[in-house]
Image (cartoon, rainbow, N blue to C red; front, side, top):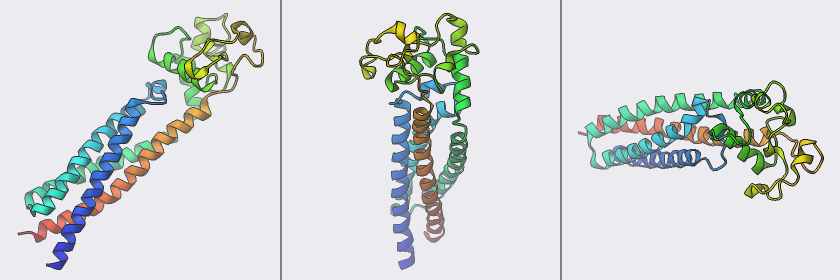
Length: 245
């Protein structure tokens, strides 16, 4: 009887942790979908990152409900509920494991050349109304940077150069009186002549990569923690299932 009560309380404890982990994943999913730094829109051509926020939202909400289900099943000593909990948590364990592996794989793809290729192919200038270009303009102005590696990103082999052959780089690369509020350009003519003090000639890659890795690392760390908790929750749910009448 003492062992059974121990397993019951451990089942309850681990499901509280599953519930908490689900809430954490839910919070990160909301954070990514809300996109506070504007980085998701820059690489909308990558389906993995675009879907990551919504996947975390779904998984977080489902795990929260499962944690509640496991706690309720243990308290009520309900065998069918415990069996259903075990099967569902096993399914989510497999899905989450695949998700964590994919997130770690994607982290290795955050390379300068990949971003540069997308920028050269899709960026359409300051006045474009599509999301990719608008996001890049916002990032370059807010971070006081230009392109991925610098001014040369908008050269001969870029879509921007094809559209504006007489303009060396976009206005978003020019220095402003207040970059945070997207202020007025100090002097566009001197900016286009690459005069020091009037242009931001450093690339944006370091800041962008650091922010994306922050998203992925935090999600992966919490994901691994939740996976470990789920293993114990599955173990105790089976033990209780076979011991309850």
